[in-house]
Length: 332
Image (cartoon, rainbow, N blue to C red; front, top):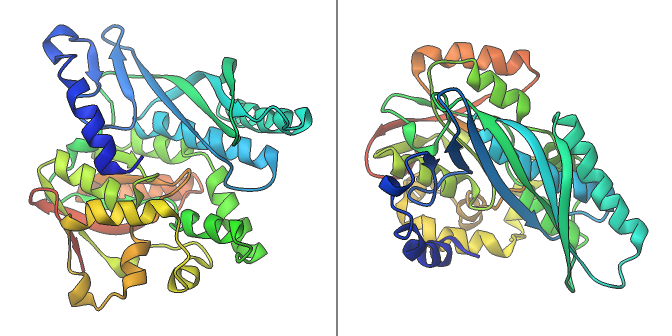
């Protein structure tokens, strides 16, 4: 579902659960975020999230692992630790059992890598395979990462290269080079756990989200809007997966990129001044699967965060800064 339609259907639901009636629901429908958070006591809060989707690659085991990494990412984006998960799956009746088994095994192995347990699941029949997880995690209620905490002067750090939507779409069309697909798969399989732990160890981190279906600019707008800020984004500093820009120039895009641009494009400024081509602007809205973390950190703490990220083997791309505003995204 596109961002505009999603906002429309969720709007009336938020009013059914006023904050004063649920004081321990620290993050819910009231403000969009990566997962729900419910306080248990002064030291512990539960994080709950769910995500599932159709295959993005051909190999069943790899698909299962990517879907699990993607679902786990919301826990890491909130600053938490995953505890356990249950499978969410839909399979055609004629899908061979060994393929189903490979998908589930891929997800289970990724959960084990994350230090979380698989505790059950639910499966329905559908014409197209779909797989993902509902994940439960734990977080300190005084140290939750939300989207809305960025402050003017914060620097913006991105931990993974962009372009998984374009590359996997090209793969479905038989147009992706093997090396480019392999790089995209490696990125999608990589857990955001080390990046999250580096952010958790940095006191100057004010806001975090993971880059997924709304693309870089969609999720950046959410962060800026919720913080009553604007984000200045350095286009030249953005990291791209191998092949992503060349494929975008050939206008190879998933359908979600058009919906994202149609909705979030109203907050984007500076593309004309930079002389960006249409394909370059569309690429900024490319929906990501299991994308990296976007972190807003106080400038004084930027070196410490980058040092921790590099020490954990993570990339750290400084792509911009927060400033006064109302959700605008200024490309420079």
